Image 1 (tube, rainbow, N blue to C red):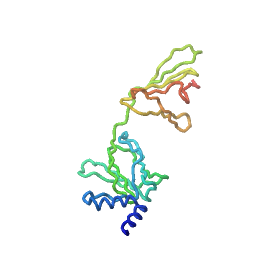
Image 2: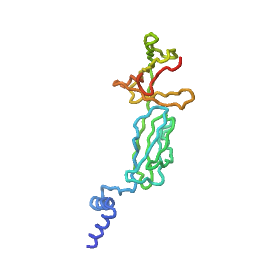
Image 3: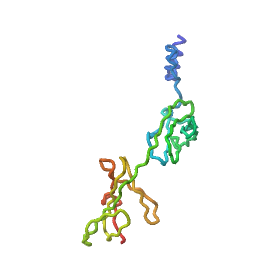
Image 4: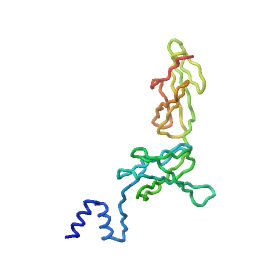
Length: 219
């Protein structure tokens, strides 16, 4: 009776621990691991990133609250050394997340996070690939009706009548999922305009009717 009451109370308090304990008693050779208070996991960690870019690594806790301290281990191979180098980076809390930025990645790395009573996260490899390159980029200039001029193309500086509409077209050396055009006009803060990706994932464009639009207002 005492044993039954103990099992009932323990199950109510910590059913995960009771289950692991029962498995260890019934099947000791399986070495069932004890459940942990924290279960760390990466949030939307990519498998590949472009060479030379920055990667923001984010970690959350499956069980809810993150531990007070989370450390990211970064393993990378060093030329001339037999063993890879392992670097520890303290992650900063940002609400329910812990995050850290890895800057200017040039070689593939392996990552894992440790925090609280969770030190079981497996290594995750991040492969570094060459950044996509723009092989062709041109501007298509459609003049206003009053100028009685034909549509022209330019790959550099150009002159156009006020009211001309500008369309950007280009092609990358390999398939891409997203592309943005960075604009810097006069003293205004640079902005990014998303480009349209064609079904072949290589042709990119900024339509002349897109917002905010490309209109020549000064000649």
